[in-house]
Amino acid sequence: MKILGIESSCDETAAAVVEDGRKVLSNVIASQVEEHKIYGGVVPEIASRRHTEAICSVVEKALSDADCTINDIDAIAVTYAPGLIGALLVGVNYAKGLSYSTGIPLVPVHHLRGHIAANYISDEALKPPFVSLVVSGGHSHIINVKDYTDFEIIGRTRDDAAGEAMDKAARTVGLPYPGGVNLDKVSVNGDENKYKFPVPKVADSKYDFSFSGLKTFAVNLVHNASQKGETVKAADLGASFIKAVTDLLVSHTMEAVKDFGAEKIVLAGGVSANSRLRRIMEEKCKSKGIKLYKPELKYCGDNAAMIASQGYYEFTAGKKADLTLNAVASMPITEL
Ligand code: KG4
Ligand code: ZN
Image (cartoon, rainbow, N blue to C red):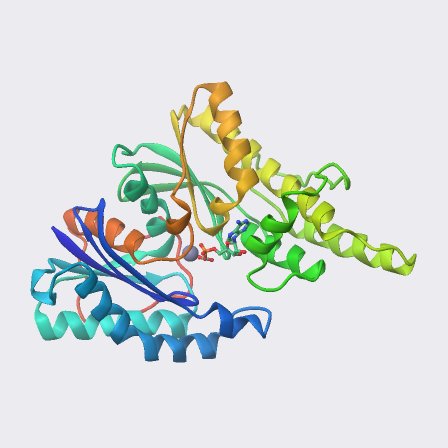
């Protein structure tokens, strides 16, 4: 079964064709990063306009790269939540138009479910149940994935998302957008023990995260140093910050895995590209005899192959939308 996936929730216009949820036949991404860079972050109005300009050619290229036409497609899967509302609407309305004009079924896909599904592409043997750490620019969750379409939230951030915190720390040390990946790069040679960050605790949950205090700590470090005429090395601050964030992500996930009796951990979302997170999680899992799954780097960030993959499982579970489908800016992963 061939699924056409469409993704436009943030600043990538993407389309892909995936067979039976696992085999990527094409994966096209038109990134807007260069344009948003000058503003230091994504400008929603610009994002919507660029999606509108790119969507037709991106979908056409996804079909031609997969060596097929729209008539070979069994279902159209589209990200409908969560994300920037104007950006989501472009993909949703394009998918609705395509479904209406061709009679091909329309399947709504939750963006974070898609991030988890990136792992079904990277490892054909992976099957639920497992515990997933989903860390993106807008969300940080520990999820109990009971089945392909059955999710339970174990833990979540109470304030900033992990990716958002990475982006803010990057800006503090003068690195350009996209912050997280640049912070990762400069930190590789930094001293991660140079600055001792506090360990944030959330009062009534051992699984929930809080990252805003770490961000404030980084900002204060830089300000205090500059008042004394000193400079903070981006590599050292970055490495220490990444250590603080990733240690928290790893320890809470390991706690959840122990309590829920899981045997597999699945990393997902843009921050799952972080080199220290991947390395430390691998070490921890090895020592505990837990199998770790990580998306290939090209499927960590936003893409439509992951949406087509999850779309396959949603469609085979009976999920379909009609032309009343709307985009939703905020929606829990558990919503049906
Ligand atoms: O999943 P994603 O591509 O988009 C959203 O759904 O939000 O995640 C983007 C986030 C950004 O905050 C970005 O800085 C972060 O993922 N990110 C990283 C790395 N690559 C991307 N954070 C840390 N290290 C990286 N290598
Ligand atoms: Zn994403």
